[in-house]
Length: 304
Ligand code: CDV
Image 1 (cartoon, rainbow, N blue to C red):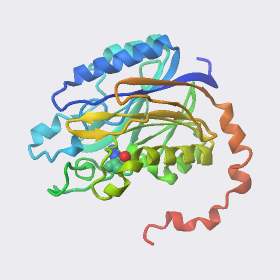
Image 2: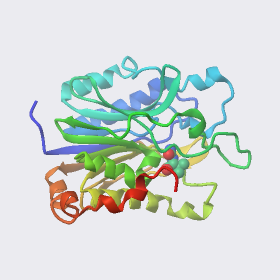
Image 3: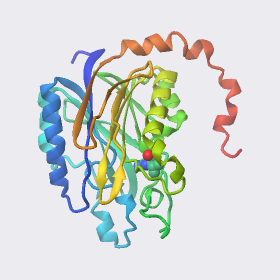
Image 4: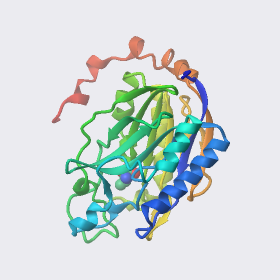
C-alpha cells in the first residue's frame, strides 16, 4: 500500500466509563467513533489509555478474581471484531490501550492495529505513577504501581503507511525523555492516551493547572522534537472522579491544531502533514548538528 505523508488523523476521546459498564458497551461506543472517523476519511484513530473499562487503579481491589476481570491475556480481537473489520475495510490504523496480562505479568499496554487487521505494534507503559499500598487518606486511589509492571519493550517505533509512529501512555507524556528517545529513532507521530484526574491528592494546589500542564508538556515535546502528538483522553465524571478532557492534535510547531470541546465521547480531527517534522528537525532542532549528548551523561546515570 502507498505511504501517505498527508492524512487526516483523530483523537477519539471517550467520556466516562462506569464500573458497571460492560466491555461490549464500551466497544460499541468506540465503534461509533470509528464510523464517524470513516465518514471524515480519517486514516489514524487514537483511543485512550485502558479504554475498555473504568480506570480501575482508582480502586483498592483485594479479590483477585474481581481484579482479573480488568485484564486481557491477549488483544481482545473477538470483542472488537466489528472495529477490526472496519479498520480492514477502510484502511485505517487505530491505537488503543488495555490492561494486559502476559503469562501472569500485568502491563498497562497500547497497540496499533493496521489495515490488514494485524497488531503491528505494542508498547507497555514505562512511567507508572501512583503507589503500591492502600492509602486511606486519599479520596481515591492511584494503584498503577500495584496493578502493573514497568513496561519491558522500551520505546519502540513502527514504520507504517502513515509514517514512523511511536506510542507512550498517560504519565509518560510528562517526561521529556519519552519523546526524545522516540525522536532519536525518527518517530514522526507520537500517539498516546490518558486518564488524568482533575484532583491530584498530593499537590491539590495544582488542580487548577491540570489542563494547562497536560498541554504544556505535549506542546513543548512536539516542538522540541519536531513531531506530531495525538493525545486522547478518557474524560468526564467517572464514578465521582473527575477526569480532564483536552484531547488534542499538536503540530511539530507546538501548536494545538484541534482540541476536544467536551468531556464526552468526541472525535477530534485534524490534517497531519509529516513534512512539517522536517521544518523543525532540519533547522532549530537539527539533532546531528546541534545536539551535545556528551554533555547529557547525567540523564542516563541510574543513581544521582
Ligand atoms: N494514568 C496516569 O498516568 N495518570 C497520571 C496522574 C496520576 C498524574 C498522569 O500523569 O496524568
